[in-house]
Image (cartoon, rainbow, N blue to C red; front, side, top):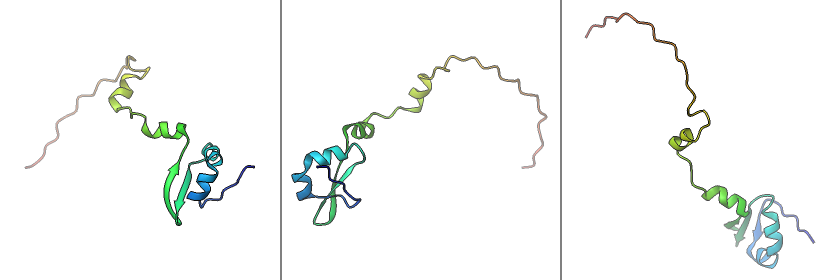
Length: 88
C-alpha cells in the first residue's frame, strides 16, 4: 500500500515503520524526518546525494576542457587613439 505524504514530512516513528515507503518517496523529492515536530533529518536519493558531493569544476578546468579551446579567433586590430590630456 503506497502512502501519500503531504509536505509536513515523516514522524520518526512512521519513518521507522515504513522505511521502504520513505525510500521510494525519495525518487520524487527528498523526505524530511521530524522528531517531536522539529525537522531533524532529510533522506534523499543517492543520485541527489551524488550531485551534492561531486567535486566542483574550476573555471580553469572548464575552459581547458572546452571543445573551443583551440579555436583561433581573428580579432580586429585596435585603432590608434590620440592620447587625451588630463590635468593633475
